[in-house]
Length: 320
Image (cartoon, rainbow, N blue to C red; front, side, top):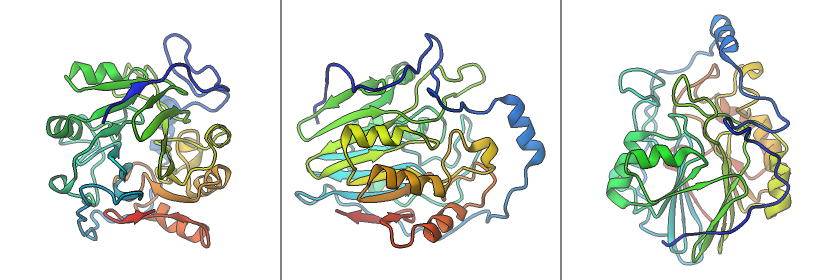
């Protein structure tokens, strides 16, 4: 796959960088340290299983059928997108923990739906932001060594990649885009935040991606709270054939609402976007907040009856 940077950026974007930090324009920002302490004091987590052994590993095809889109939900926000001449992967994580260390931090409660040995060659990887459950160093290192894909990352994240000799890497601000022979990738706004340590909060950007292809437009939302960026995406690109929308890590709402959608929010985003089909991401693998592991999927299934919004199990796939 060959990619080239396109000049300019999409219109209608609000300022979101003050020269030192990125922020969510005209929206709530992520809660601060005192709110974290308040949440920890008041936590009432739902009962949830320690391990769920219900994943049957899926072996994807090497390439999609001609003129078809093949999408496979692997786990969390990791999705394999296959179209004519390209295999894309979003926010890859195969590690047992979403953490800078192997012995501490949120651990997985299900196996990935595609084993690493069964993953087909990857042409490009889309990274939405630098949190450990979306930018996982062991998975990045393994993919870079095996396939040397293109890495498409938000503004500021390229430095982290280059320090680890990962490339080729393309940094995009909101509204900037790359073009290839069979697709176009555009970075689009999200309502979230970034950090990998105690002193780098919001020093790099977060984003979603619009992928314009010959088999339809795909929208990968990354991590995001609900916001008016969904209407902007619909106005700029039209309704997606497929939207990948996060539904988990939302409780309690007073704390998580600015940066994570609940299933109700995701369903509203699906409607605003006018998506032909939506698939839920960011659920069922790591327990990051107070809702039980499978509560987001159950709530979405209750709310979305009769609508084309699906919560796939790890390893499930769809052809379009």
